[in-house]
Image (tube, rainbow, N blue to C red; front, side, top):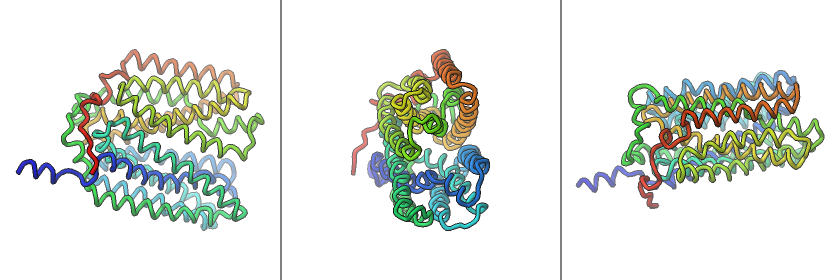
Length: 417
């Protein structure tokens, strides 16, 4: 009787199938919103926006996408309605994007741009929590890495599709953004199907042994290791240049035509996917020490991307993509290992908000230093990343003692059905 009950409680999909289907959901969603984000600036300009308006709107949007997770994360933990938060966030995104192509006023377009980013804030902590349960079986590094790799396929296809539609229609934004309604509908349909098949992904994690550091999160406060980890990540992000600044450098220095910048961005997203898979496998195999490569890559971005050589600058953009791949996959996997399931969505909200604040500060810092001197920018970024390495090693931030505490041999066997 016990055996029958235990089997009945198992999810209808294997953990790997759950991860790959969820990754396909993200692929379709990225197809939608990355396609729109690739032309947000020109679209707003066509409605009369100034450079200040574009910069402010996109900045407010990113702040909303990250900062509001401080609210959505704890609320998801409190209500335990992780699927509802996830579906609502995706719905807000896939509805607002096609409407961008048909609104005729600047204020309406601005509202939709910000609403799309709010959708990301609504869904992300809950989505990461759902994914973390299945990843506890597949290996947290590998689970988040495969999800990120699939995600980035959409990030490549979306902008290229929009660019193709603009070329065919002579620059008409309505059909270029309207076509994104198709993957948007597919996103919601697949998400609802997955929710019906696996109503409670926490079942994946019920038979796994909790890590000692994760158990600390059950006491009502996030564990100290989590806060040290957030400090390390924030420091690396403070010295991390944005693609916007790199593309600015490429164009104004005459290293690359503006028309090729989206192609380079797509290539960087490909590097993102490859790096996510590699770092995820290494994390499960060797532990948190793999994160020590992040400050090294971030320093390499500055050295290469802001050089006077087109080849070196392009290489720097690819290294930037690889660093983003680690940020978007393995960094999130580590959080799942440090915090117990009952506090995990809130922890993801705190982590994302801190990451966003550090990224904003880093963008402002590197932009200001670029105007002062490219040489000063490179030296400052390298110095910050060296400091991040010292902090990580001094406080053992990336040691086995503060990662998920689960060696690959302790993961349950995931058999497909």
